[in-house]
Length: 316
Ligand code: DAH
Image (cartoon, rainbow, N blue to C red; front, side):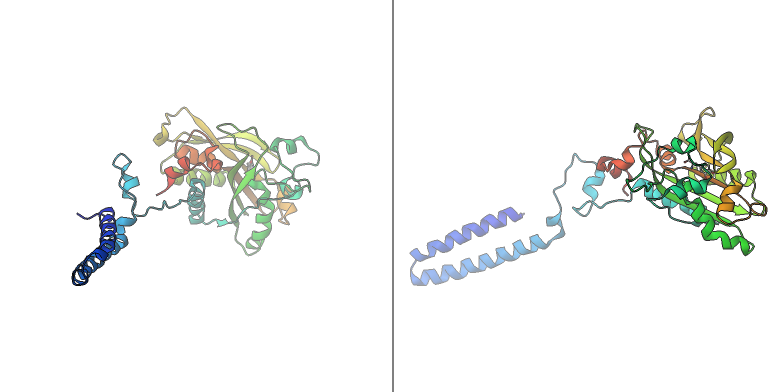
């Protein structure tokens, strides 16, 4: 079979033969010239056909490589959605199907949304527990998605006046001045939930979050709460999940998935909602941790690393 390389070297030798025509008689030169020219045209046509064939644009097959590498029809590798973003879409989708609105968080905030609107007393040590970054102008990259609670309450307040409720989830990127290690990152994602109606209860809160986790992990789960403290909820809880069986759980490992509680009346008041008529609950937890558990990942720092070896595991 003629390969591209064979044809090209044949073309070269024909070019050399053309040069030797000058040594022939006029009659012979004419005869041989016609012959050589026909040969040349036919080789050029074969080269063009080969160069335009799809096979010639593919890299050679590497028989030692994993199957997928050679099966790719295009020599260009396509990118993929970051695992946190695809999980985030899935998470938001679950809440949307439960009837929640979705708001996007901000990446630069201020003292009012980070602390004042969340009932942190001025100069209270609880403000220090959030390892907050600050710009030289005093802006704050949010340390949690709870900074969106005031905005969510304001935005959907009319729902209450129209006889409905506020039901919103807010995923967002958050930042903390942390020492990084396999389970701590300075930049990570959280998802906040806010619900307000005339009759909201802790029972509703626990049922919603449990239902969310069961849909996310695709199995029945055991959950528990334990008392906690947040200035913006009263009472406040931590929400724990028994490690799912599909992920090696044997009924003895409890994982802390985030904080929650009944929205403090001061938060409602600040947003212009009468706490003697309406009550609400809120919850918030890390997304990175959820995704790490789902994919049995051991180091949270991979997410922000931009390492292709890591990201390629999630391309489809
Ligand atoms: N924002 C809290 C944190 O990052 C978690 C949290 C606790 C969110 C209680 C809430 C809540 O909405 O009600 O530690």
